[in-house]
Amino acid sequence: MHFASDNWAGAHPNIVRGLAEAAEGHAPAYGASELDKKVEHRFSEIFERDVAVFFVGTGTAANSLALASCNRPGGQIFCHAEAHVNMDECNAPEFFTSGAKLVPVTGPQGRMAPDALATAIARFPPGVVHGGQPVAVTITQATEAGTVYSLDQIGAIGEVARKAGLPLHMDGARFANALVTLGATPAEMTWKRGVDILSFGGTKNGCWCAEALVLFDPGRAREMHYLRKRSAQLFSKSRFIAAQFDAYLRDGLWLELARHANAMASRLAAGLVSTHDARLAWPTGSNEVFAILKNARLRALRDQGAVFYDWPATAAIKDELATDETMIRLVTSYATTAREVDAFLSICTGE
Ligand SMILES: Cc1ncc(COP(=O)(O)O)c(C=O)c1O
Ligand SMILES: C[C@@H](O)[C@H](N)C(=O)O
Image (cartoon, rainbow, N blue to C red; front, side, top):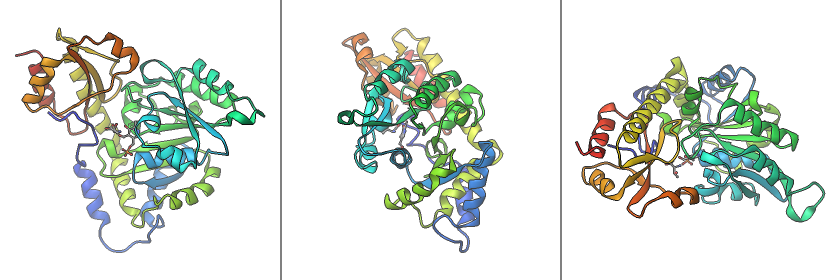
């Protein structure tokens, strides 16, 4: 019963096979191989426009370099208060932007509220040097609350960013999970709603180590080459990241894996809400379930081998928690089975 994180899951057999096949022979290094070029072209096909693609090794690197490409002196970057870039990347965005500041913005269920974003941006009026200058907006899709922005919600954030003359970045560590939830196309969920730069994650959805920065304005690419190299994220054997994405994006594997992970999360969430001593902190919109359970039940689950994290409750949730309750995060992946979900639920119902 493994629900700690999709980062704990392995690599899908097709990804492993793709890596093994790419391991044969020699190929130009540092992104110059035919396979690198083939996969970069595949991204343009998927997003229905010419894009610039930069392979990196972690989601944190993708996010930090995306924001670094937007920064200017005194840069202010607007994110959700609970955003991964703000809470879980050990100041990497601040470091790789050479000192930009992340400005936390509130919003329910892990999503930034457009009016709160507009208010936060207006706090830094043009020409008033003391506060610095707005340089970017970043959203996470699927969010850190396991919810997703609807296409209209992305568009509303995109409109606020556009009016302020700011690029919009999307942390897509779980991009595929959100995409299949919305039933949208990659273009509809990104550039057609105002997204300029995407961190496209593959690692949490069956790849070993595959993240890509997708620039919808290839004009930004020149700087990104230098930002990536300076941050030591230009892999010499880049073809192995390309090989993973080649297998991942082939025949819709990436969408199939995300659909499965999401289906397992929905099964888990539905089972939890049908028990009396469990409830959801937020609606389950992807492959992450945030639930509140009695501590005694949590002990029984762990005693019987379930693996998951207690999760720091936001202030709003904290107020709701009884003294004998704890919020937890349950994350499913391509490897999650219905059997382990049902085993977890049977302990929750005491069967
Ligand atoms: C929403 C989100 N963004 C970014 C990341 C960063 O990915 P990594 O841990 O590979 O740096 C994570 C990690 O799981 C994440 O959950
Ligand atoms: C750092 C931790 O939150 C990681 N991003 C995860 O989702 O498991």
